[in-house]
Every structure is written in structure tokens, then in C-alpha cells.
Length: 193
Image 1 (spheres, rainbow, N blue to C red):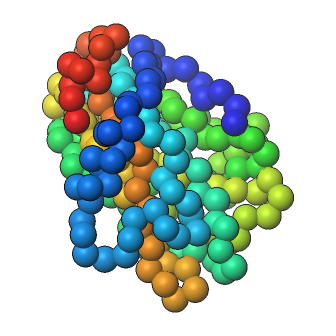
Image 2 (cartoon, rainbow, N blue to C red):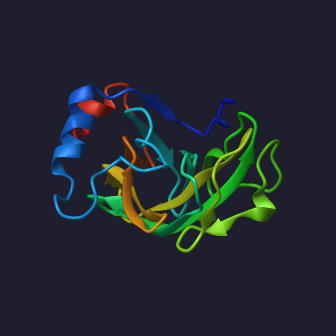
């Protein structure tokens, strides 16, 4: 993947495997099994801590949606897992080519980027993702708005259908957004999830 654009004060770090296991253990036990469908396993475990100026949103477009199924995936719902002072303002499915991704941005994402087909974006709810072929894939772009000085979510849930089957993908990226202050080097310890 190409490097995501840098944002002011962005600190990305890996979170230990126990956190990923805890996320899976706390997931809702009813409904389809998590991360077993054609959109994959929710990606690598990790975390993102970001400084945001008051009134600014974060656009997170680093969740790959690669449909390995035989028919189109239809996204039904995108939601945050255990949000605290954090709102999901909007979510989009954005087609990409090659090893490019939408990336992570302060504010709403800009227009044209190499390999990102921004003009072909779709609202996530109801979006159809065809089976992946060649280097054609899609990213999930979520626009996150803090509603307090420390805003958090444990992950992103994506509920979808493919071939008459219901699926549930949960990312393994934890979010901590700090309004008006920078992320400390020890942010996973200071803001335990």
C-alpha cells in the first residue's frame, strides 16, 4: 500500500494481540460470526491516535474492502464499536486501483488522488462491491467527529450480504481522537481501551 498522507500530530502504533482478542470476545454473540465472510478478517490489529483542532473531523480511509466472493457484496450498515464521544458522520465505499488507498486526513478528504476513484464513491449503506479482479478494490472511508475532548471507538463494524448470506466484518483498529491536544507517546497506556 502507498503511504497514507500525514496529518498533524498523527501517531500510529500497533496494539498488542490481547486487545484484538478482547475486541473479538466482546463482540455481540448473536448474528453471523465475525470476520468470516468474503470481505476478509478486518485487517491487522493496530491503533490510531490523532490530534484534531476543535470542530474538525477525521477521515479514515484505510480499511480495505476486497470482495473474494463469487457475487457482489451489498453493504447494509457501518457502525462504530463502543464509541465514546465519537460520531460516525458519514461512510463511503471508494473504488481504488493498484496499491493505493484513500488514506487518513484531517477534515474531509480532498478531491483527486492517484489510484483513488473518488468520483465513483458510494454511500456505504446500500453500496455494491463486485468481486475483486486484478488491482480493482475498494476502501471504506469513515468520517469521524469528536463530541468531547477525548473521543474513542474500539473498531468499525461492517454488516453486509453476499450470495444470500449475512456477514459481519469488524476492523481491528482502535481510535483515540484528542481535541486541542497532542497524542502522548504512551497513548495506548494513557487511554486504555
